[in-house]
Image (tube, rainbow, N blue to C red; front, side):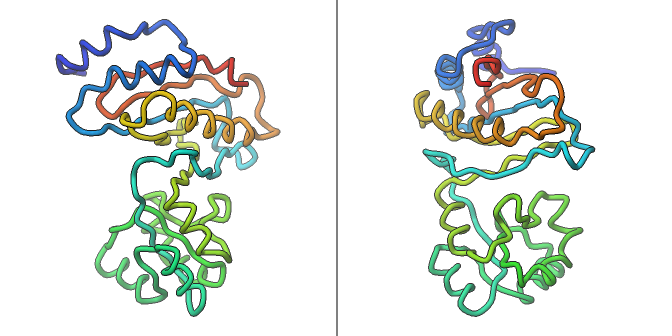
Length: 230
């Protein structure tokens, strides 16, 4: 894979064989981010579980202490008082069947998170094949199917992130922007890793955290000493 000159220069500052302490790792991520825009910092954690088994799923959501640096656009399926409460909490789009039809007919995706009240799931369920593959389907585990839609909207706007395993048993999750600096990124990292460790399935055997890497959008990955986190 071809890498540009800036990337190669940045990569030289990182010892590929080393496992860094969290604070040092975040300082390196910030230092080696050379893009002209404010890069997103992502955490990639490989877990020693088998996501094919229902009892080894790792999924949840947490409000990061300093948010993600990105304002999420929220679509809420709710009616009557709950719809009004969602609007008051800052939801970008609120509706019922009208929103379902818009998504079905127009292939509309101008939102980042979908929230639904439990009584709307019969309607929202029709969108499973459209929203599911994009990871947008509301779920009780992620806190996006809830009677308190207003609270869900408030938390998402405050920097709530959802973490879940992909098919290769890796969690990919944003923990902020390069402009946050090492200290705030470290606090966000610690909050997210704490939640992932707490979510360890009882059925998981052996080493739970196999590897832990942080990287800015255009920057090289920095390996973190996961053993110190457990």
